[in-house]
Length: 105
Image (cartoon, rainbow, N blue to C red; front, side, top):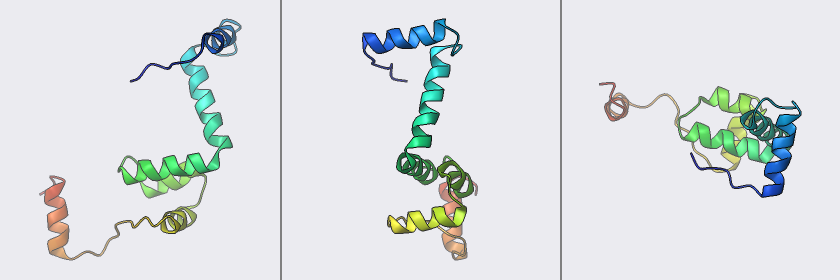
């Protein structure tokens, strides 16, 4: 993990907030700041959710939840961005190829 590069002033401000008991640690402050960032920047939250879904880190339902959208709305946003998602109903040979690729068969 890359170290955070923040100014001396900002580092001092963070230290003060931790020292005064607003946060138990710098990590807690960072987590809170990140959550606040995502909650105030909807586009950023949606883009992050899409990337996590596309990288197969989370399901489409979880991605929709993280983005603050319904699953249907999330699918519509992806479609509007030209993102084609894989769906069920592939032929047996196609499914066999995919299962072999991910090591299930």
